[in-house]
Image (tube, rainbow, N blue to C red; front, side, top):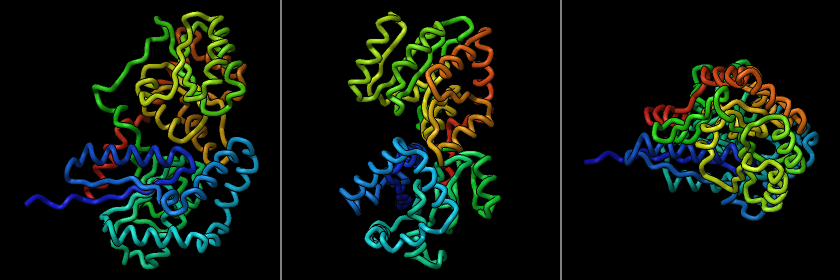
Length: 371
């Protein structure tokens, strides 16, 4: 008789795209490795339990990090350095009850969380970890400036994106035998041979720069113009679904015929990163980790105080890019990276190759299925 598939629940939340991205990619890796021997499901239990209220708080969170970053920084540090969050747990009674029902109905072998709050609620449901009817795995999506919410309540294991984050958590008291470094779970496209792409050699061909506009839209047209004026590079600009922004960039591009390609929403971001020499983006967790998997050097043009500070710090320590917080600084670093036959861009690329974990989702899946 065929064996019963291992059942794995992957719990996420819409407070930052990194959590959802990690959850989706983790499921992709599990199904790729395990095939019919695994059942993996991604759930946003906050959305399921709280509906419209969850959507309101999610939008408030996005507004806070974009519109009032200093205020968000204070709140983030308060969550990190105090135990005020634990006082709010009784207000999540409905979610806690729904999680209990979920476990009873699904009877999972493993529960993987890409959002740290779930572990607190599971430990209220099962005060004795030995009585949990499943293994609880925290998949940490932050780097270096990792909030203590990730590790100050028990878990069977923590899977972390890099050794630097493991060192921070170990120094804070997380048991080292429960820490495992596999990388941030990225799409399989970064690893599978038929999906791989190669950027042009910037010392002999026109360099290609990818500019992902996910915030800082007011500065975007000036940034595009400054880059095109200071270099001969070809620029691919991702504007998402923002039609007004698209028209603004199109207007700038008229002055530089043939040098700008505009992208709307795309599911080909891994291929785009792998086929470009530089990527300009904010220091979002998922985007930075995808660039590292693509070995595509970063020029980071925004850092949200709190969790994104660690993402930039990781790039800085690796020496895989630069920080540039206005259009002129972005253009300066593009020019500097491409000068002298792109010596600096090549150095950044080499440094990223040394830490690349493009197969992270596969390695994590193998580890989970072996538990």
